[in-house]
Each structure stands twice: as structure tokens, then as C-alpha cells.
Image 1 (cartoon, helix red, strand yellow):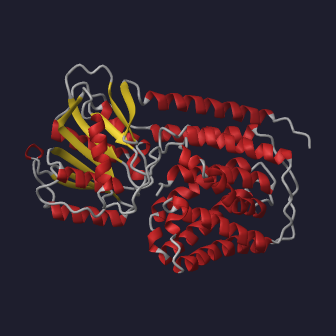
Image 2: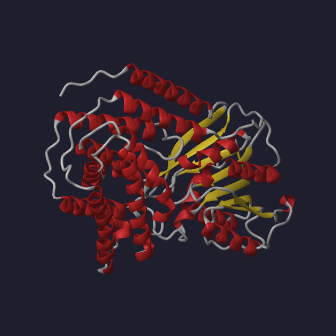
Image 3: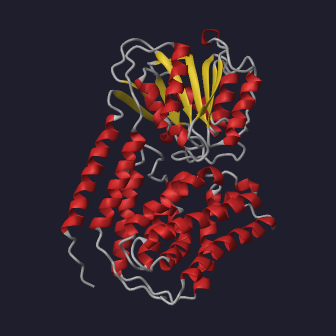
Length: 493
């Protein structure tokens, strides 16, 4: 099939997209201007220290920043950069089982392993010439608040503790010293947790100079993940540190806008991928399938997979830790079962993909991998997989392929914009099925915290496929990209 020459309009869009990518990456790089960073590994735990360049005014307070479940030191970079620009020395790390840490995590977030990880980081950085370990604070998000609240009570010298979206670790009126609690307006369970911790701590009040200050703030318009990136969160946390330690010499004004710049990189990537990658205009088969029939196949296979996996769980198989991946193993199996059911319901002949389809699928995957994954590797998650994760990728991609191919077939009708409608329908079907899964199996409850991200990830994949036709282009590019992302996010057990 001959490749059509791109129109002038598409070429102009491609150039604009490339300019947008270049300018936004430059702005992302500027966020570290004036800072120095040192990365290391201690007892298998990867960590990073960030601080102002050319510090000549003695030692600085140390701020330990702990991420949440399925997070990493990278996702806490916004807070770390805010504190570092303000003159503090900041340490971030990856807990066991997360991102670059190959040690498997323990399932119980209230067990001593979290505290042991913090102790390892403190041991690794305590001899760093700029750090004053007599002036120390700890900040945690979600699971990381179990570490923060536990650490600051076992280390009473910790002069400030900030718990963002706190869990159930109890506190006392005496410890932690100078406790700030924050929770998002759209995460009511964590708001309740924060109120309970505040009551245990004695309520709002106190004096930072005496170490008995307590406060609780509800961050408007954010949920469990977006609270980490909120400028309000960053400003309140920095103000709490400055009230405790005083404003640091050389402090620079900084507002973290990296998420905005990364968003523009994503837009530029999607524009370039949609305009530069050659179109594939294969005439779809199965035109006799009605819209109602296609919707029934998608919804029916999704709900059937949830019910089948629930029944398997009743037989004693622990699906929440399948493949050694917390919660992610369940998702992988869900996609496989739902895809196989849907393919069976479709009763369509499966034709081996040709070279053109393989080429276009590879180009779409490469564009998403570079422009969304690698470019976002310093903003929201470490994208390069460690060996233990990378070895699982072919298996996980193969498991996701039936579902992605099915969606490509069901949405392979009408104009390109129709795939946006299928994206909305797919997002609803996936959301509803996983909510049902959590209701039936509460051990999967962690999935609820990540569900808001799924529609965005699926949209990133759909947009460059709007100008393509063919089930395999959609299916292969989706299976490769989404499987990589799942392995980058979910922790190893």
C-alpha cells in the first residue's frame, strides 16, 4: 500500500509539536538551575541528595522526603526541589519494591521495614558535609506517612514532621514535634485519618519554638495523587519548615511548574505522532456488527473477567500479589481474561499483522515511550525498568495483547474521532469493573487510588491511533506501552 505524502497542514502541526517539545524540555531542565544533586546506593536502596550549589554558610537542616505506595523518589521531586531551592538539604529514595529498589516490599505498611528503609537513608547521608543531623525534618505521603510518623517518634530529635494524606499510624500530644497534617478535599478517607491524627496530637495550636505546634490543612480540589503536585501543598510544607528552622541563607524563590511543562511535552508528542507517523487506512472488517453488539462485547467481557477472578480468589489464590507485583498482577490477569472472553464473543477471524502494521505500531509505541515515558521520568515516575521488571515485560505485554487487540477491532469503524468515544466507553467499563473488583475483594483497594490515572494513560494511546486503521496497530502499540507503564508503577513483592 503506497504511503501518502503528509499535507502541508500536517507538516506545520508536526513542526509546532516539535517546537513545543523542545521548549518544554528546556523549561523542565531549568527547574534544577542553581541546584546540585548526588545519587547513590546504600544497602541496595537508591537515594538522592539535592541542595543549593556553592553553599558556603555551613551545614543545613536535612529534610527526608518519603513517597507513598506505588510511588518513588521521583514523584516527590516537586517537594524536594521546593525545599532545596529554599536552602535545605533534601534526601529522597525508593522504598523496597519500588522503582529502582529491587528488594521486595513487605505487604504490611505498618511493619518495621519502612522505618528500616528510612534508617538506611539516614545512615547513607549522615556523613554528607552539608547536613546537620541535629536539625532534621521528615515529610511523607500516604504510605510514606507511616514511615514519617514512626520515624519522628522513634527519633525525638526530629524537629518537624509533615504528613500528606496520612495513614493510621497513631501519634501523641508530645510526639512528633511540630506536626503538620494535610489531606486533599477529594480524598475523604484520608481527611478523616488526618482529623484522627490531629485529635491524638492534641488539636491545632502550639509554638514551633517549643516543638508542640500542630496544624491540619485540607488542600482544595485535589485527590490522592494530585495533592503531591499542588502548589498549595508545597507552599504550606515549606512555610512549616521555615517556621521550625527559620528562613535559610541563600533561599531562592521557586514555584514548581514541571507538571505543566510535562503536560506540554505530552501534547507536543501526541501532535507529532499523529501527524508524522504514516496513516494506515485499511478497510475494517466485521461491518455487520452493530454498535450495540460491540458495546455488549466490551462491557460483557470486562464484567465477566471481574466475576471470574473473584471466583478464583474465593478458591484461595492470592490475586493481589500475582506475578510478584502488588495489585498490578491482578490487573495483568484481568486484561488477559477480559481480552480472551471478548475475542471469543467477537467470533472474528484473526489475520496475522503485516509489516506495515508492525512498523506503525512500533512507531506509535516509540513516540509514547520517549515523549510520555522517558520525558516524564523526572516528573512522575522512573521510566527505565530495572532488570527484575524488564524481564517481566514481554510476558505482561503478551497478556495485555488480547484486550488491546479487541478494543482496536471494536473501535475500528467510522471516522477517527469515533475512537475518542470508545476511549470514554472503555474508561467507564474499566472503572466500573475495577470498582466492582474492589467491592468483591477489598484486598485490591489500593487500585482505587490509581483509577483516576487510567483514563489519561488510555487517552495518550488513543490519540495517535485516531488516524490509523487496523486492529493490530492499536493492539500492539497499546499492549507494549501500557504494560511497560504498569511495570514501572506497581511495587514488587
